[in-house]
Amino acid sequence: MTPRIIATGSALPERIVTNDDLSRKMDTSDEWIRTRTGIRERRISEDDGKEKLLKLSVRAAEAAIAMAEADGAFSREEIGLVLVATCTPDMAFPAMACRLQDALSLPQVAAFDLSLACSGFLAALDTASAYIESGRCRTALVVGGDVMSRMLNWDDRNTAVLFGDGAGAVILSADERFIAACTGGNTAEEKSADEKAADAFRPRFALHSDGGGEAALYCKAMYFNENEPESEHMDGRKVFEFAVRKVPEVIGEVLRLAGTDAEDISLFVLHQANYRIIEAVAKRLKRPIEKFPHNIERCGNTTAGSMPILLDELNREGKLRRGDVLCLSGFGAGLSYGAAVLRW
Ligand code: UT7
Image (cartoon, rainbow, N blue to C red; front, side, top):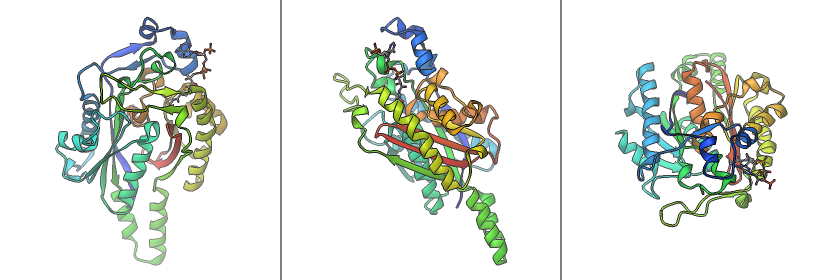
């Protein structure tokens, strides 16, 4: 079965925190943040207890479900897998996916979280695709979201200015058209043509971790003991250099897997960590910067939320046309990195 994204949703907290707001609290400036990262403002969740990610995830998932329902004969009862990619769950357990399943009144299907920081959404999308391709389920809800504001040290200007909170969701479903195409032909030739058509629409993934990058990006514990929070630590320069080297490499790998070229990609939806990283990747791939949409200026780095939030914004702005070939790529703690090619 060929999985395709049939709907998207996203949710950002109401509260906007500008660079100037931060410069009143710490030794930084709007000029430094803008020129080094591209960020102008980010959304930060209000201090409303321990349901921050659940609230954002429910809003994002409900928006995606509403879009799928508006688009055709879809019912939430069809969802056969629920995945949440996050490194900032509201609780150690139950998994965010189980709590989301309950909040959305979804069927009693497999639901679990994946933790791979900024690469998490890609890993969850890959897992959901594998479930659908293998026939384990036909439709999956995949959420990527983080509330990094809970684990930031607000006295550390090296990290505090970079992140924002947010969640995005996609519904991935076996594509009926291609299932029909694959089973429609009678002759050997027709069957082979059907298989080729379905294969062309199959999403491809390349995921890696160098496994030795712990010192460059880590948080020792979650914030379960609110009295002794453990905050994020990052060697920004190291992560920057890693991303600029590895993202073009893994994009090249996945393009080869998909049998396509960078010239055929309609849009590159990259993890939003730093606008300068996006520019450097565009340059290395020799593709115009217009092919690299971004929302980092408004959202900052929303970790596992960044790719699905951007996808949803592009989708709702009508910038994604059915049949477009998209390339997604992310990187983060691990150090991990990956890319996907998928047909919209
Ligand atoms: O999603 C994955 C997770 N993280 C990332 O992707 C982050 C990747 N890295 C980056 O985006 C960039 O490396 C940063 C934005 C974090 C830093 O930019 P940079 O051009 O690599 O700057 P730098 O680390 O070389 O620091 C330059 C200077 C330092 O001062 P000195 O030592 O040269 O005097 C920092 O202390 O900038 C200083 N600095 C700041 N100054 C004002 C660091 N943070 C700030 C700040 N405001 N917020």
